[in-house]
Image 1 (cartoon, rainbow, N blue to C red):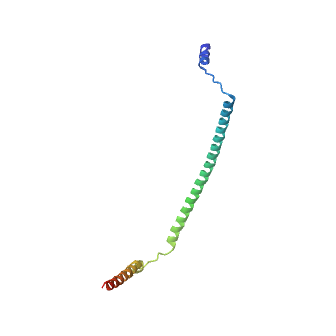
Image 2 (cartoon, rainbow, N blue to C red):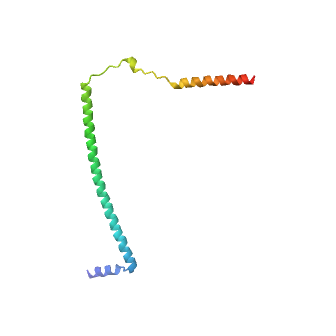
Image 3 (cartoon, rainbow, N blue to C red):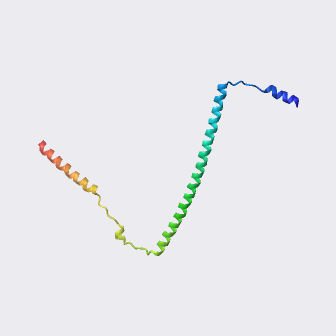
Length: 119
């Protein structure tokens, strides 16, 4: 036993730290503790917000299911309207064609004027 204690004492190394270094180390240690406590506080707030988010998501899911159920009920109650085939086809006139034709006409007129001036 004594032998083990003496071996441990022989392996110990003592380092002298100056007063300024000691104070600086103490400040660093206290700042680290402050940072850790701030991180713990942030984590606690995050957990609370996450729980609140999950609760709200569950409420949204429940309301969506309720809305979906109401829509299905309405579809059963309301009669289906038959739309004739002719009204389903929607013909859209493209203004681009009219515009292109007008431009073509204008180009032809200008070309003709140029030809007459060149003669």
